[in-house]
Every structure is written in structure tokens, then in C-alpha cells.
Amino acid sequence: MDVMFERVAGLDIGKKSVTVGVRTPGSGGGRHGETRTFRTMTRSLELMRDWLVGQGVTLAAMESTSTYWKPVFYALEERMECWLLNAAHMKAVPGRKTDVKDAEWIAQLLEHGLLRPSFVPPPPIRHLRLLTRYRVQLMGDRTRDAGRLEKMLEDASIKISSVASSVTTVSARAMLAGLIAGEADPEVLAQLAKGKMRSKIP
Image (cartoon, rainbow, N blue to C red):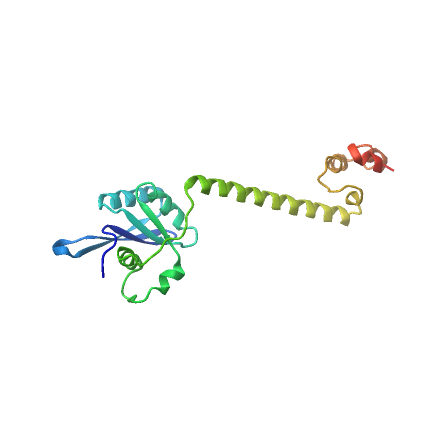
């Protein structure tokens, strides 16, 4: 079988360690394989990267294991091409031997061009995606908090949500602040209404 990529690395990633199998040209036209294991702490990942660069590796591939792949991928992407692999696609490739370690197997498949990468956005897109996802999460948290607050008020027979469009409006928040401060007179609390809410004072 033809070798498509001369200097490759296959990475088997766990939570605490990453096993790296490297395939490079060997003597007599053969192939040379070497395997090393590194911890997943930043300094160890830097040592792994320097070792791969020293081996002349230009292409590294790893399975998308939970979120554990991200620090490894990010440590390497500026120095070599990195492929993120779909685990289902890996299992679909025939011929795997049970005594072959995962990292070595990935490297062997990679050098023969039998793997295809998943799309990983470039860093600027990743940063923007993280920001937008966090914003969506915060908006969801805000909605859930408002729902819990409304339920608590209803349990206490405080019917702000019957006259205010939301318990988070400026008027509703002012009235709640008044309640928290100890004000119990509904006429006084009603005078805290603002804007369109003032027409609902009666």
C-alpha cells in the first residue's frame, strides 16, 4: 500500500495522558515507528510538540475524545497540520488488529491516506462561537431565573406578573426592591411604577 504522508503522528488521547505514535521513513526504504506517552499538562504538551517537530512530523491525527482533544490540538495546530477524526469513521476502516495500539493504528491509517478529518474552525471562528454560545447560555439562565422568581411571587400571592409584562421590567424591579426594603403598603409600591405601568396603578 502506498505511503501518502511520509512523517505522521497518531495520537490516542485520555484525560491524564496522550500516547503518540510516530511513523517516519526507515532504513532500506521501510517505515520506522516510535511510540511515546506524555501527560496532558501544558508543559508536557509543549515537550510533545517539540519532539514531533524534531521528528519532522507535518501531519498529526487524533480522535475527538470528549473535550480532551482540544488542549492537544491547540498545542500542535500552529506547528503542523492537525486532523480531528470521527471515532465512528475510525471503526469503519477494516483490518485492525487487536494487538495494535490505538496511536500506532491511527498513524498507520494516516500515512496511507485512509482517514479523513472533521472540520475544526480556525481560532477566530472558535473564539466567536464560544462567545455566542456563552451569550445564549446566559440568556437561558436569565429566563429560568425570571421564571423561578415569578413562581415564588405567585406562591406568596404577590401578583406583579398580572399587571407587568415581566417580573424583570424596570417597574417590577423597583417594586420588588421596595418589598425587599420592607415596604408593604400597596399604594406606596404602586407609585414606583414607571412609563406605561403608571396607567395600571389603580
